Amino acid sequence: MSSHAFVNGFYYLPRIDKKLIQEYKEDLICLTGNLYGEVPSKILNVGENQAEEALIWWKEQFQDDLYIELMRHNQEDENRVNPTLIKFSETHNIKLVATNNTYYAKKEDANAHDILLCVKDGEKQATPIGRGRGYRYGMPNQEYYFKSAEAMKNIFKDVPEAISNVQEVVDKIEGFQLARDVLLPAFDIPQEFVNKDDETDGGKRGENAFLRHLTFEGAKKRYGETLSDEVTERLDFELSVIENTGYPGYFLIVEDFIREARNMDVSVGPGRGSAAGSVVAYCLWITNIDPLKYNLLFERFLNPDRVSMPRY
Image (cartoon, rainbow, N blue to C red):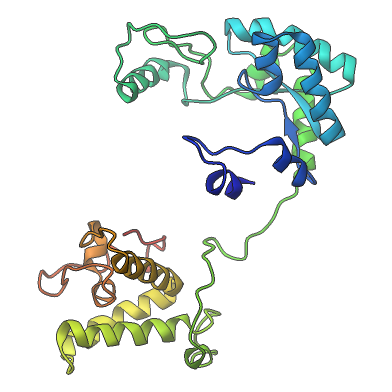
């Protein structure tokens, strides 16, 4: 659903529609959301009847996996909406869940957050804004910090079930263990490289062998047909680090889309940051700065002592 929202439904923000929700609703848990959710916003802006009709639609889709979300940030609009939401909960037998939007860690961070929003929007703190936004320039609401369990219990002490139902939602969530921390698309490897390093490839399906081939072919174009010991040693070192950290596919993917970008006359820069320290990236034409000429360090880009996704 997230992929659909970004690829097919993106308009300023990622979007999905109810048809897509109906298609993928199995095994999903649904909350009615904050003041911008369909039900609360209709209570505020249209009327209770239309809001109730909307709630019934969501109930039909998700049954016992639908929860009505209650928020209490001392916002005027929330105080208007919440009594109706509680009434809907009782009328339609939909459980309440207490939530809290968190924009900053501590209560005293509210003003700093307000200043940050002003900088982002090019506004002054004295500029007023509309209701229900969770902040106001010059008058930051201080309730959007990370609240403790005790604080939340106290805020919702008149509806304790909204707190206890949080555990019910948590218990419904099924955990999934990813095969590895970083999931990359499977890169198509030419068949002649697939079986070359079955035992030493670490399950990379020939990616290391193909990356080595492309790198040394590129090195001949960058440094000449006969490679110096300095170039060969540097390439062997970088390729071994890439293999041991598990990122050969990442280099192949980046090389592929940068090459195609250039083929389509899309402007591509010479490289940025620590990526300029990689001779492999230079030989693949990912970057256009020779690290050996400028004595740049590969370890700043990819380091076996600090394994993380390289960035170009």
